[in-house]
Image 1 (cartoon, helix red, strand yellow):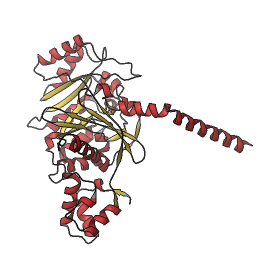
Image 2 (cartoon, protein in one colour):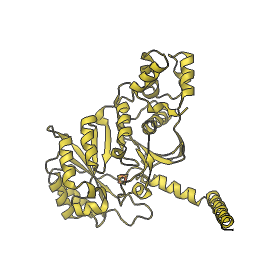
Image 3 (cartoon, rainbow, N blue to C red):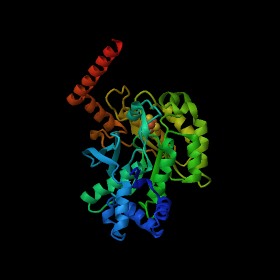
Image 4 (cartoon, rainbow, N blue to C red):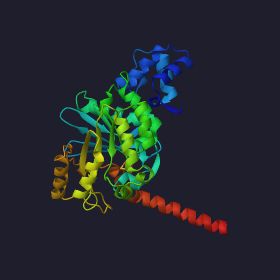
Length: 373
Ligand code: SF4
């Protein structure tokens, strides 16, 4: 048993059925059970014969995560910390609104992009999540909702958790295809958003492959400033990014969402707002203004209310929609990577871990002494 059942898409299941001399129509039934009916227990796949159910149970593993912790915010957001089969921590956040339930998911453990204001960026990069691990987050969220919210399901998926989704392109795209497939999770393309720091070649590729909604982490509209905050800007300048985004928006000028964290004294002046307005010329843009979510060890502070208002008024006066969005679940380490980092800290300072580390260290020391002798 080496593979997760959630890694397979409909065409993979067709191949699997053919290889085992099962009828091809079986592929659709299995795919529907897993994603559309949200079941990960083949013994419940009642329209399949017993030998097929047994074959499924023994050929794949079905559980990809265990829940490490589960915190509920005063704004009803649920932050869920998951543990992978290789003991890594991954975050997802379930955010109920009046008419929709949005799930924010992760695409990597850690991130290579190193944005200076982001806790995940500070963690460094561990590994990409597989397609199955990306989809398992939606699966788990639906199961939680079905238990507690009377059969409700996730209505919107945003890739704004840990990682840069376009840096894990193949796995993310394969997952997106199942998210929007009518026999998969069945969401419309307009309800799936990829948030990117601006990986230009992959934005161009995405336009060809699967043009879902795009949110761009901009945070500054001058190259000097943005390069200091986001190292990726040294690779792909604002101008290159703008060209790719305008092409992505196409002749119909599909709207693009820009994320802009407001950091006291860093990117929140009227001069910054002017740069931003100039940069957005030509776009049908919406800007989410997000006062930075402070976390321990971060020297940056969220902008004062007055500065936020002035910045927002400058944009609004130029007809740019720019709601101020406070991160959901702030009381439960809502910002991306914050709960995983906090949990890692707890594990590192847990007396059992400290004891294990000491034991390990003394073993290493004694083996060094032995080898020197
Ligand atoms: S903001 Fe996004 S791209 Fe930048 S380090 Fe954090 S997770 Fe990575």
